[in-house]
Amino acid sequence: MNKGIWYGIAAYSAWGLFPVYFKLLRHVPALQIVGHRIVWSCLFLVGIVLLAGQWREFRANALTARSLRVYSVAAVLIGINWLVWVWAVTAGYIVEASLGYFITPLLNVLLGVVVLRERLRRWQWVAVALAAVGVMYLTLAYGSLPWIALTLALAFGIYGLVKKQAPLGSLHGLTLETGILVVPAIVYLLVSNSIGTAAVTPGDWKTELLLVGAGFLTMIPLLLFATAARRVPLSGLGVLQYIAPTLQFLLGVLVYGEPFGQHQLIGFAIIWLALIMFGVEGFIAHRAQPVVAE
View: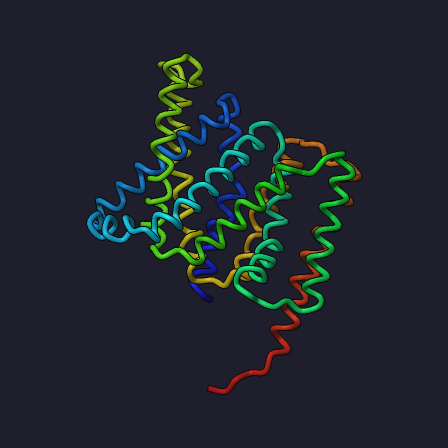
């Protein structure tokens, strides 16, 4: 099996279990959690680059116009994704956050069509349309757009597309992304501390360790995902994407007791049906392809 697939499975499994960890930080404002995630992730990544003796290579490849342009976009997208997701988890919206990642695979397909000029077959279009119906149903049921789900799907879907075309390797790319975000993150944390709104108080070692650990845990699946994104087709990443939202959904409903009523069940069921249809269609199409003799 392609090593990239295993990297993808590991990354999405880790993301699927992340709510367990971040629930421990629900007393900390989401923006401060994200600020610490950025700072500690950046420090860990820079440390790895230095220990690997790759600092000169990193600087030579990262400080180019193309790299800075591409990774600035990626940094903004991952920053938005982190902030919305952390807020959703700590505020008790794990189920809706999981919906965003259920939608992402189909959004990846649409991005492949629009940006990469990939072509969809008839039943693939039907699956995408059915997912759109599910989102519209949930919108009517909620009385408003499921903005958490849609924001996460758009931010992470476009992030995956950007990473697919990024010029640097996974380690150097993530180091540059967090490096772009680290200055505003440090400024924000310092201002929060100076005006007395910082959630971490002197002696609160448990919270401090959890925030440091958040940076370390953040780095691992991102490195795995960045490696997978360069080795696995975009459609393949869409299939692996199902792992994370499934685990998050189960945690939200079964472990944390978030509400999941009839209307939510119907909306989710329509989207799940679209995903099943898309997966079955892809399997049948793959089996129907002629075998090329070597």
